[in-house]
Image (cartoon, rainbow, N blue to C red):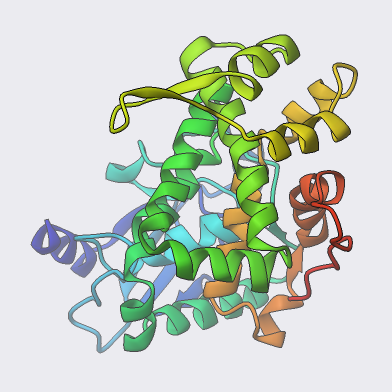
Length: 322
């Protein structure tokens, strides 16, 4: 597969759905140029797959670097994935179209409308950051979660979005202590106790949609909050939630506000993961973090639960500073 990718990269590679300046762009070892007949208006209104650019290796570069984020891919795969992560677009290669279906995605963290050079700078800095040997070694277990995160952003049935997003979360849980420490401490500024409690509510809502296709207040309370699961190791039924968790939920969520609570769950883990990847992609760099737009909305959506379901004797969480 890698040999095929390398051979493709030596020639001109077709790039779809990528807005490109008249002067082209240079990112990593690649030069991007517009295709003939390029039209900004067509791309902005596109609901189909549109060929917009050609990518070639820069002069003097004969062999592409291997991808950090995609097994068997090249550096070009990383450039396109990072572009999609920051802008929430659906740029792709011809044979990767299934990874990024042709939907406009409008939620989440975006880049402000900046000149092409600014965007190139952000992508170049991030690409260089993840290509450091120590980065790949430290974050080797997050590659799958990053790709699942991109897939989970695609507008789809609610249960499918939950399913894909939680696959990403479960992928990250291979190193639970490290991930929880980063999420709760550096990103969410909440106790692990609070995170673990609220995570159970998210997961129960997700499971209701996946298995039952519905998640009404009565269904959540009867089958989830007051329900049981079968523990095969103990060969007995175990409560899904303990008394403290039930008390916390009942204090904050009623039949009247349950729909709000439930709807806010739709993007909650996607937001948490977005914040997580912004952090590990080097967003502490001042020159990069100042380019991020809508980050406060992402944080606000994430903190909705923690502000409304905080554990006793715990202060309201402060804002996250990137």
